[in-house]
Image 1 (spheres, helix red, strand yellow):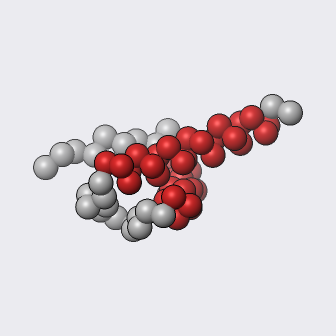
Image 2 (cartoon, one colour):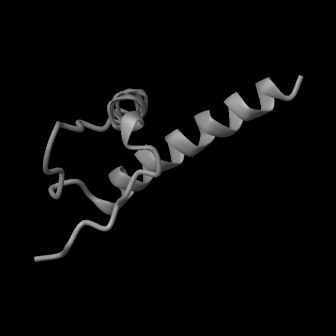
Image 3 (cartoon, rainbow, N blue to C red):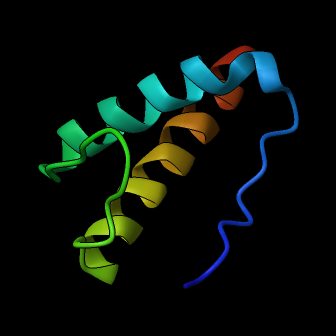
Length: 65
């Protein structure tokens, strides 16, 4: 079994990041659930991560104005 190496830099932000991930999954049509999501395809998991990065970049760009 693989060890999960995902670590969050600010532990207090875990709930917010989980909510953000669920919102991103919903936006791209991926059925993400709390807990284990090993049944997702690489494409589905990648689309969630890609959507999260896209939204973070948009947020940063808005803050630069």
